Length: 104
Image (tube, rainbow, N blue to C red):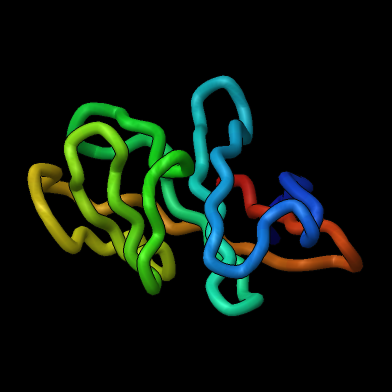
Protein backbone atom coordinates (compact mmCIF):
# COMPACT_ATOMS: atom_id res chain seq x y z
CA UNK A 1 0.00 0.00 0.00
CA UNK A 2 1.34 3.44 -0.95
CA UNK A 3 2.42 5.90 1.71
CA UNK A 4 0.84 9.33 1.27
CA UNK A 5 2.26 12.71 2.25
CA UNK A 6 0.18 15.84 2.79
CA UNK A 7 1.48 18.47 0.37
CA UNK A 8 -1.17 21.23 0.41
CA UNK A 9 -4.57 22.31 1.61
CA UNK A 10 -7.42 22.20 -0.92
CA UNK A 11 -7.84 25.97 -0.54
CA UNK A 12 -4.19 26.61 -1.50
CA UNK A 13 -4.60 25.48 -5.12
CA UNK A 14 -7.65 26.92 -6.85
CA UNK A 15 -9.09 25.28 -9.99
CA UNK A 16 -6.83 26.06 -12.95
CA UNK A 17 -3.77 26.60 -10.75
CA UNK A 18 -0.48 24.81 -10.17
CA UNK A 19 1.78 24.44 -7.15
CA UNK A 20 5.42 23.37 -7.02
CA UNK A 21 6.00 20.82 -4.23
CA UNK A 22 9.15 19.19 -2.84
CA UNK A 23 8.17 15.72 -1.61
CA UNK A 24 11.68 15.00 -0.39
CA UNK A 25 15.25 16.01 -1.27
CA UNK A 26 15.15 14.08 -4.55
CA UNK A 27 11.53 14.41 -5.66
CA UNK A 28 9.74 17.51 -6.89
CA UNK A 29 6.09 17.44 -7.95
CA UNK A 30 3.82 19.68 -9.99
CA UNK A 31 0.40 19.67 -8.29
CA UNK A 32 -2.51 20.77 -10.49
CA UNK A 33 -6.18 21.45 -9.79
CA UNK A 34 -8.32 20.72 -12.85
CA UNK A 35 -11.96 21.63 -12.18
CA UNK A 36 -11.66 20.56 -8.53
CA UNK A 37 -9.75 17.32 -9.18
CA UNK A 38 -6.10 17.21 -8.14
CA UNK A 39 -3.31 15.64 -10.20
CA UNK A 40 0.44 15.36 -9.63
CA UNK A 41 3.26 14.75 -12.08
CA UNK A 42 7.02 15.12 -11.84
CA UNK A 43 7.93 18.70 -11.02
CA UNK A 44 11.19 18.97 -12.94
CA UNK A 45 10.90 19.21 -16.72
CA UNK A 46 12.53 16.20 -18.39
CA UNK A 47 14.23 18.60 -20.82
CA UNK A 48 16.41 20.77 -18.55
CA UNK A 49 14.79 20.56 -15.10
CA UNK A 50 12.54 23.62 -15.25
CA UNK A 51 10.00 23.94 -12.39
CA UNK A 52 6.72 22.80 -13.93
CA UNK A 53 4.72 24.05 -10.94
CA UNK A 54 5.75 27.57 -11.97
CA UNK A 55 4.59 27.05 -15.57
CA UNK A 56 1.37 27.97 -17.33
CA UNK A 57 -1.67 25.67 -17.17
CA UNK A 58 -4.12 25.63 -20.06
CA UNK A 59 -6.80 22.96 -19.79
CA UNK A 60 -4.86 19.93 -18.60
CA UNK A 61 -1.53 20.89 -20.22
CA UNK A 62 1.29 22.56 -18.33
CA UNK A 63 3.93 24.49 -20.26
CA UNK A 64 7.43 24.60 -18.75
CA UNK A 65 8.46 28.18 -17.94
CA UNK A 66 12.03 27.63 -19.18
CA UNK A 67 11.77 26.20 -22.72
CA UNK A 68 8.03 25.63 -23.30
CA UNK A 69 7.92 21.81 -23.22
CA UNK A 70 4.34 20.65 -22.63
CA UNK A 71 2.98 17.85 -20.44
CA UNK A 72 -0.48 16.49 -19.62
CA UNK A 73 -0.90 16.98 -15.86
CA UNK A 74 -3.44 14.14 -15.66
CA UNK A 75 -1.01 11.50 -16.95
CA UNK A 76 2.49 12.96 -17.35
CA UNK A 77 2.29 12.37 -21.12
CA UNK A 78 4.62 14.51 -23.22
CA UNK A 79 2.58 16.87 -25.40
CA UNK A 80 5.25 19.08 -26.97
CA UNK A 81 9.02 19.51 -27.40
CA UNK A 82 11.78 20.23 -26.63
CA UNK A 83 11.44 17.54 -23.93
CA UNK A 84 11.62 13.97 -25.23
CA UNK A 85 10.48 12.04 -22.15
CA UNK A 86 7.17 12.05 -20.24
CA UNK A 87 6.83 12.95 -16.55
CA UNK A 88 6.03 10.38 -13.86
CA UNK A 89 2.46 10.59 -12.57
CA UNK A 90 1.65 10.27 -8.87
CA UNK A 91 -1.48 9.06 -7.13
CA UNK A 92 -3.33 11.90 -5.37
CA UNK A 93 -6.09 11.82 -2.77
CA UNK A 94 -7.96 14.40 -0.75
CA UNK A 95 -8.57 13.67 2.93
CA UNK A 96 -10.69 16.39 4.53
CA UNK A 97 -8.90 19.60 3.50
CA UNK A 98 -5.54 17.87 2.91
CA UNK A 99 -4.22 17.10 -0.56
CA UNK A 100 -1.96 14.06 -0.35
CA UNK A 101 0.47 12.57 -2.87
CA UNK A 102 1.65 8.95 -2.83
CA UNK A 103 5.35 8.43 -2.24
CA UNK A 104 6.88 5.83 -4.53
